[in-house]
Amino acid sequence: MSEVIEEYSNMYINGQHKGLCKEGKDCDHSANADRVSQMEKSYKNILTELGEDVNREGLLRTPLRAAKAMQFLTKGYNESIKEILNGAIFDENHEEVVIVKDIEMFSLCEHHLVPFFGKAHIAYLPNKKVVGLSKLARIVEVYSRRFQVQERLTKQIASAISEALEPAGVAVVIEAVHMCMVMRGVQKMNASTVTSVMLGSFNEDQDLRKEFLSLLKKN
Ligand SMILES: Nc1nc2c(ncn2[C@@H]2O[C@H](COP(=O)(O)OP(=O)(O)OP(=O)(O)O)[C@@H](O)[C@H]2O)c(=O)[nH]1
Ligand SMILES: [Zn+2]
Image 1 (cartoon, rainbow, N blue to C red):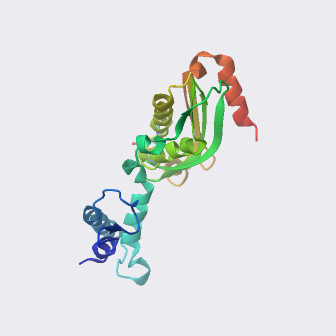
Image 2 (cartoon, protein in one colour):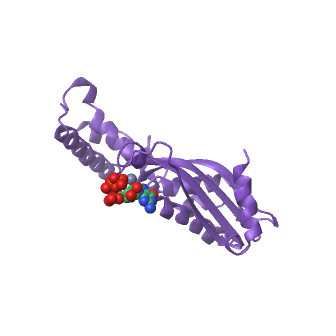
Image 3 (cartoon, rainbow, N blue to C red):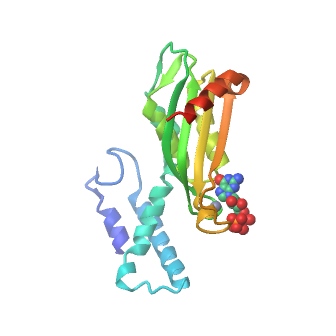
């Protein structure tokens, strides 16, 4: 048995989940072990093609570590908004804007598979329903932990909030630095990219939009 399959099989003993997955959640460790094992092989190939000796001490466990790291960095594919928001939305007659700003986000650019990272700022104008504040940050996690372009990430976050809460309006702004523009390609250290999606009242009401954008400038 390969090291990775052994490691993953050990997590599921006598019907008890140990380690990665939540108690009682239906999951398939052996399929995941196969996936990680295949990725490990692929990383070995990549390192070899780059001229590295995959048998030197420092690299011995690197392909496996890289495979697991990549799984973590793309864990959003296995997460569901529905599950995250289950029980977290409640009735509240709050008619003012709710803003959560400076939510750190880390994603991977789908063109080069290198990171882009920065901050997401979210506002919504409730329409009878509000959501646990941390869940807004969790929505950012679900969509950013995937291969992305910043525009789509911004839109997916806004749409998820809009569908779940049916608010009067939603605004999402993301500011990010793309390592594909910093470490390679055009090599611009200080360029940052800002994307925004304004739905409902944030789209229709210029004053509301301005108020949100001016709040983002304040520290
Ligand atoms: N719109 C958008 N473009 C992105 C994002 N991330 C990376 N890109 C761009 O995707 C483009 C890929 O273009 P290509 O010309 O195929 O790639 P490239 O030759 O590596 O381009 P350079 O980076 O200019 O060297 C580049 O312009 C990247 O800057 C993103 O989130 N949104
Ligand atoms: Zn890129």
